[in-house]
Length: 345
Image (cartoon, rainbow, N blue to C red; front, top):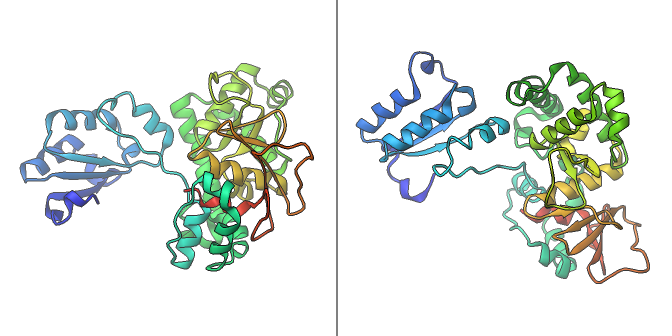
């Protein structure tokens, strides 16, 4: 809770909009009663489960200016849809999953701070040495890749993969059909595509062949690929971060995070896993695109190859070329431990 509301708990109210109370009452009714009782902060959870929630929040904002509103929802597409209703009225924050840093801090009760990308490229040996004096990063890295991205791993334990699969099913079978007119008949094929992506060496889509295999036309398939990216099921990688159209073919397809690979794949490709981790951790605050050579280019400046501990740069390389190497605790020269890129946020 914000500092300005500390000590004013009696004037604050938390409600979940999936509560049965709302079967016979409206959100505006609640705001009206709460305001008349001197309320100042109304926290609304699960807003996506309340019909026309964005319209009523807009009305509360306009007619009860004394109330401060915080709302949360777990349907990303529903929040996107409501942005127009709430334009100029609400700040929308999109929460990502746990970074590797956050996961380790949570598991070990530490407070190791985040590191900037510039610091990693210029001072990675000292940084990795300092962190490794407090924890053994390679001890935690495999478990993070498998089930550490979504915070609910702490609640579901060994059943985390099943819970992730359930979330994927919800997006494909309910949210996309309702909110993006996604044809539910193609859901089994799209699930198959997600499994193929996780098991492949970083997946370069042949849209013509895919459209024939799935049985939908090229335009619809490209639209669906965009929806998967929008839903945070995939990350579509392009050679440029600007001027991307809805019907532009991605150069490479990745799952949005490595936990999805373990939940959806059968034989997860280790090279794919490494690149998915790197792309996921960098995409939060940086522009990541596909260069002509190398695996990734970051902010149109640094080129990074991702691989195992024995990966080497080509002989002809520039000052801004680096390797993100898996399986090493501390790097040297231009070889940086892959796990260290998990300390960016």
